[in-house]
Structure formats: structure tokens, C-alpha cells
Length: 404
Image 1 (cartoon, rainbow, N blue to C red):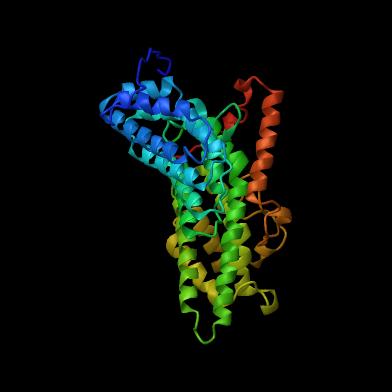
Image 2 (cartoon, rainbow, N blue to C red; image 1 turned 90 degrees about the horizontal axis):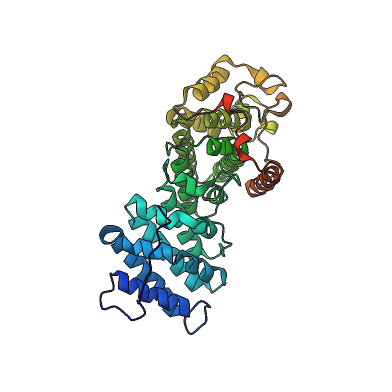
């Protein structure tokens, strides 16, 4: 489909109609004459990229030859070249903004395939932007969210690379799960849910999420949620005169958002995700942090019993995944304190159990999420180099995990 070749003639003169193939040819001519970003051509390049975006959106609805030309001349490579020149925040912001607009407004799948071909989008995803710049961060995460909305059984192959065993759209997004800005964290949750519930049937990709990312992501997520709970508890304990109601209200609202996000994952009913997440929630959060605070001595409690009761009530109100809810209720109603002594896991079908030695603890993961993903990526590359015949890498498919 992408191999069509035509001889494109002319196009070096500015077209009177800005929404036309001729004008796109002129924009291409401008790019070829300005491959290096300078102070004198920075604004010209930004406007050129904007114009190209407008033409592509128009061409999606009116003229398929626009995308033929865009692909024929590999024009996305010019965008990437501009980005890699460290041309300043202004160019980065404008480029991310226009890409976001472009992918938001493309409606035809064929047009989308054109844009996603040649792996240039993944190269932009993994580009080292200056994320300390709030505007760049905002447009970047918005770009990832827009792309995640385009995920389906046909487009996933453009994002997940079986041969390198990498899924940049997903792994780059989850690195910001604990970002200081709430809007970034919310976008990350949306991206992950779009990935999980995208009705994707790519077996290798599902195995990648299960084996390479589920444990590090959920362990770090649970630690982040638990740390937030401890902050909430401290706010309650130190606010005897009720001067920090606004802060406490924000902390409670954020925690409820966490619970709704966890429930959204669980109700997708993806078995392997639910196994790993349930294991972490029970053995690294609900039992050691919430329930233990109800039965232990005051000096051993991590949070106040009253706070714990409130948080547990919200768990039962918001989370609807029966295996998790039933297991938690069983512990509370039976008063079985043996769950805090070394024994077999209460709920752990997954081989990567968080219940080391049988003792349930609220502890920080041994590695940051970013570090875990990086180590996993290096191990995957070494494995690929040792076994170039990728047809045999689907081992374990007899025990295939599925999303129902």
C-alpha cells in the first residue's frame, strides 16, 4: 500500500490555494532549502510545519494524493530532523502542538497508516525532550494521549515492535505516573486504560505487558498510592484545628481518583492484569497498610485506625472486582491475623508474587519504574541478538493470557 511511486513535478512556486497538493509541494521545497534550523529561519520552519499540517488534514477529507506525496518525499523525516537539532523550546512546543492537532483530526485509517509508517512517530515519542518545561510536558503527554486513542488491532503494529520487544507509547507514558502535575497523571491513566481495553489481540504484545511491565508498574503505582495515603493521614493528625481543610479535601479527592483508576483497570477483566494488580493491592497496600493499622499496637501502626476505616469503606464502595473485594472482606470479617505471619499467599496466582517470604509489607519497590523498564529493555535486546529467529519467541503461549 505504501509502495506506490509517482513522479512529482514542479511545486516550487507558492500556490494561491493553500489547501492543495501544489502548496504542499511548495512547502516541501521550503523544507529542503532549510534543513538546518537557524535564528533567521526558525519562524519560517514553524509556519511551514503548520501549513503542512493544515494541508494533510484537508487532504484526509478531499485529496488522497496529498498523502501520497507526503510519504513519497518522506516529509516526516524533516520534522524529526528539526527536532533532533535542539532548536529550542519554541520549535519543540510548536512541533508537538501541530502533531497533536494533526493526529486529532485525521479520520481515515489509510491516512493514519501513512503517518505512522517508517517509525518516525515512535522516534518522536522516545526523543529526549526537556520535560522540566511545563509547556513541553503538557503538549508531549497530550500527544501520547491522542495517539493512544488511535490504538486498535490494525494500528498497534505501528507502536509495538515484536522484533525489538518494545512498546514506546506505553512505556514512555507510564514513566510519568507519579508526575507532580495532576493533569499529567490523569493523562497517563487514560493512556494505560486505552492500551488495556483496546481490544488488542497481539499475543506478543500482551506477553510483553504481562512479563516486562505489569509488576514494576503496579508495584510502583501501589507504593505511590500508599505514600499518598500516609500523607493524607499526617494531614488529619496534624490538623487538630481544621485549618487545612482545603489540602485534606484535595488529598481525599486524589485518593478516590486512584481507587476509581484501579477499578477501571480491574473491570476491563484482563486476567493477567487483574492477577498482578490484585496481588499487589492486597499484599502491599490494603492488608499491610489499612487492615494492619486496625489490629496492631499504636507504635506499629502506619496510619490512624479511623483513617484506615474510612479508606477501607471507600475501597468497598468503589472497587467492584469480586475476587479482590471478597478476599479483603474475608480477612476483615474473619479476623484472621495469620495473614500477617509467614505463610502462603492469600491471592497470588502470578509467579512474580510480591509476598516475599509470606510476609505482607508496605515497602518501597527495589527499583524505580524507569530503572526497571530500562533493565528490561536491555535484557530484551540481548535476547533478540542471541535469537534472531523471532518465530520461536512466543514460548509459553500454551498458558496464554487473554483479555475477556
